[in-house]
Amino acid sequence: MSLSKAFHRPPAKRLPPPMIVRHVAHSPSAILPPACETVAEPWGPVLPVAAHLRCRVVRQVTAEMVMLVGERVPLRRDRRRTSCHVLQISMYVCHVVLQISLTDIGYSFGRDRTTVSHACNVVEDRRDDPAFDDFVASLERVVTSVFGAPGGRTHA
Image (cartoon, rainbow, N blue to C red; front, side, top):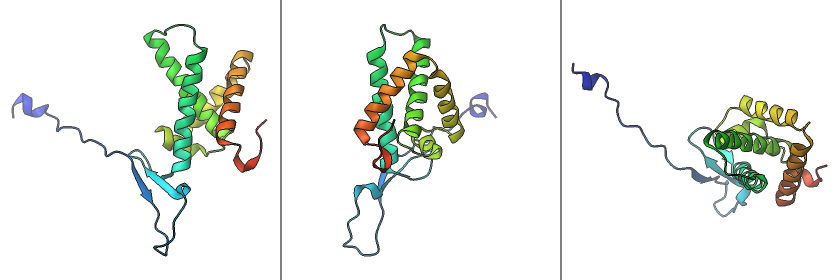
């Protein structure tokens, strides 16, 4: 066996793009609201579109607010750290404000539920800093105004 054949890997398979699946009701004439649509992701089971899209929007809003607060162009290691903080803060806000389960948040972000739990604990510990607490509180107000509070309640 030649050396090139021993180390040859087959080409990587590409994952299919997310598909939108509509649940079929018992009668064909029944039209379901968009909340009944689901998204099939390659890394996990089918999620309700509402939870998946809400997590994506929260992540984007968090990234935009972090960019507004930042004063300088970050170095490579600072960009990576910033992206990790954005991910942790957006997971925390999804769980606390939107009351999405840790498992659903994990599927939406492509992470495990224990990673989401760790992110929530990290953000909760960092809220002792007044500047960080003000930032997270303002992000919570923005997300609440965009999506409304779950159950029609206002978030304190």
